[in-house]
Length: 344
Ligand code: KG4
Ligand code: ZN
Image (cartoon, rainbow, N blue to C red):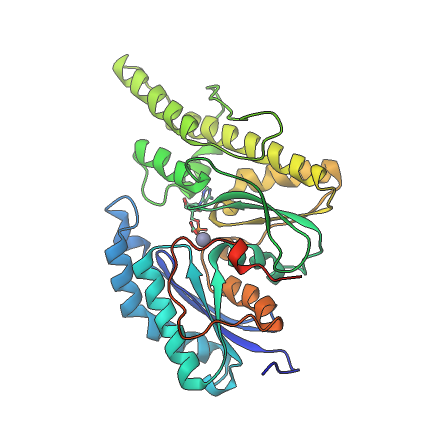
């Protein structure tokens, strides 16, 4: 079944509020990468409304796939496989992509590849430069905060993860408290650069040596600070609150990440997920890696946030190992990275 030429994969991503399709050749060449964001429809609710997300995906999916195929300059018959985000994500949203992928794979009689959303975020880095193993990955998205050790393609050892809110979630909740639009991450990032760290907010280090994260205490500290100031009729400039929050987040993320790289004695750090678009985090990681002589890869902004090119890049590894799904593939909100491991 596996072909010798650089395989061409159509990848589909509908796990949250972006309807996306891409055509990837040989795991690294982006022939097309189309993303339709629904953010405008969710904005007035201050977050993603699952039912609205599903409806938008249904509306958009065929148009986006057609656009991806057309922009790639190929015909559907040229495809070697169809890949799709299987989970985690919103079930109704996942199902739209999974069913579109199943229908295409069945009609074209080509392999179907179910991909873990976080594997996609990790492999966004492979689109920038080839991954050199072993490496450590910092995953920072709206749903995940994880440190992952990878010894080879498709091998994932989770070293630490969040015990409560994901970092993107904390950004979005704090932004909402500050009256900023959804998604709040980019707004806090922008304001943080206009303000100063005038407040010392807590750093949640957890037990000595732990690679886990916790952001709900920090989120509550921001909310309490704001609440107390309002009661005393004091004004805290929103830029300074944003700067203080961001400083606390970055301190913990960078410290734990560099410790993880040292513990595993690896020389390559990759960063993944929507919060990897954060300017402050990018600069702090660049500084720290420069000091420590660690090779750092961070995807450009459009490959940090949800897209299908990253799903195609991750699918390449599974294609090479003939790790295919069958027609029982289903959306799986609780899918674990371990269940998609490439066996050594
Ligand atoms: O990876 P992603 O696009 O979707 C998930 O899989 O969750 O991440 C979305 C998250 C949101 O919480 C958004 O606020 C955050 O990424 N984000 C940022 C920035 N850009 C996006 N957070 C902080 N700073 C940014 N510049
Ligand atoms: Zn994501």
